[in-house]
Length: 160
Image: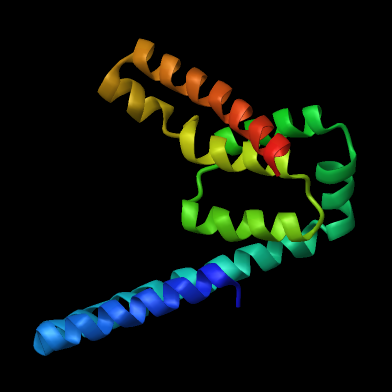
């Protein structure tokens, strides 16, 4: 376990004990409620693991490494940015998927481009956004989000 994880565990335990001391009944009620929420999320977590396993089964790690890690990074970044734009999956599914891609040898730049466009650009949600906010705003927001996603990916590639 790394130092940050240890710090978070220690802080959590300290706050839990402080909460128990202050109001035991409320704390136990909150723990019971969070347990119920975890039961509700269990099927989604299993689905995430299944989806990641399915993707990594059909796309072997050496293919991921050659296309996202060793090929032309600029082209891979743009392709994966567009894939992120048209993909509609929740962020809590995307983060483990991105981690698996990184473990398979993908370069950080296309992976970050995929993740940021996935969360910032909405081609699938474009009609709803256009209806609610207007075409000009929707085009401007999605265009700027795409550009900033590429900038973020390049900066991450330089930093990491």
